[in-house]
Length: 253
Image (tube, rainbow, N blue to C red):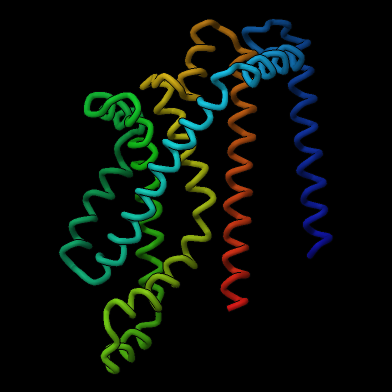
């Protein structure tokens, strides 16, 4: 298994080097900074962005919007997923809502959010709307996968609903959620930035991307893309590490 992991990492590094080499060739061949910036100019812009005194505030505010929207989505998905399993009314009530959220174009949701909310709340709302259906369905499927013989036995022994939820429903839900948490966190982060690009809050990655685009500063756009990719990888790695630590802590108990 370790050999396979090392091989995967090696191929991943090779593919990244190939992408950088293609970028280098295209920038030389096209020779137009607006179309394809050089690696050198992109790195210069990257350093300028990082050195700016508002850089850390921008990153912090974007991450804060992302985490708030994601945590609200996760909390509501768990609560409504459990309630949908115990109440036919809530289950049927959620069906058209999910259908609507999955069918409406992202741009339409952002436009509605711009009408309804202030600029700082639009990105959180967009992130929430995008990941909530995925998390809700994951939670509901996790509950539906529970062996109902266990539920029947719990009812037979008159186990309280609180104990049933805490010891049976919640563990099953989190087993399923582990598979989608990383991908939904990444999706939420991207959608928050998309919402920022249109809502234009004062401190935001999306606002700065839009600003670079207005000035036709493609090296600046590329620099922000690199920053976004780095943050996304750090978030995904941190979440994966947290899940592993929680799993080890549970085994230790």
